[in-house]
Amino acid sequence: MVISGCLVLAVFAQLLWWIGAITPYIRWQPNDFFLHADVDKNGVLSTVVHIDVDNEGVTPVTIGEISAEMPGLRLLPADRTRDERSEVTVGPGGVEVLTRRIVITDCAAVPYEPQPIRYTYRTWIGSGSAEVTWDSWRMDGPEGSLAVAWQRGIASKVCNEAVSSDWF
Image (cartoon, rainbow, N blue to C red):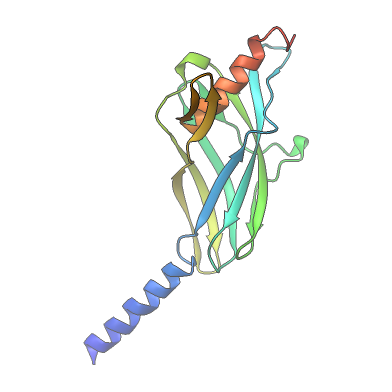
């Protein structure tokens, strides 16, 4: 009887895990189409990134704060004065967009290996935090397409635009 009860609990826990109630099944996709360099009056280089949050689970999930800090790059918290939502609820199979500002403090220091993003989440069963590493980007060049780490792709595009004579 005890073994049967443990087996039922294990199957139930596995079911909750599978439907995304314990740990959400989220696909993250930063959109590079709207990236542009912005230099403020203090000379700080930044950009705004739009992040598609796709819930591939069957349970609604609320994504709270997302953050990343690495050499040369910092993902800032939501700024309500810029109409950035600090959290977003994504229904089962749904997609929502988060907007965040990224500050690039040193173009050359941004790592070439993909770096993780930390985020908080809530489901109907509880809350937690996790890390995810976004997929590599494809950059086109004279010799074809090349996969680069997501943060390197953002930094390359923004830093190149900031020093381009077309930008001034």
